[in-house]
Length: 176
Image (tube, rainbow, N blue to C red; front, side, top):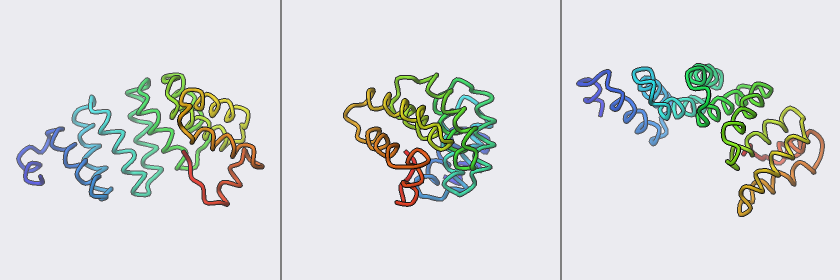
């Protein structure tokens, strides 16, 4: 595959494929580099940019991921996958209010997606908006009655201070 990069150095398909292979292997720095290069060459490869943002997060670079997410979002403001990636990066970078704003946009763009409703619920809970978090989780539970996760998060909201997140953190829980 590296030979293909030498032969076709600016080919977005080759760049993305190489990035995907590194991602599958768990080698996140080159994965992010090649996936984002594919997007730079061909801005219609939004999936490459989104996966590049998540590769940066896996690499432990939330601020870089947030910066890339914001840049890609600027060019694709109505893309649910880009909004999700940008929201996740902002939350990981320690900017929950910014993440909540993005999560609200996400559920506006994709109101029928239970997973996006759950992401918005978690973002609301991180800033202490328990009523909004409850509303988002209830909506997620309505949209996906077979899924246990929204109901589990509703139960966590009732557990204690800070919308139940303090108790969840102490128990080693993770974001949806």
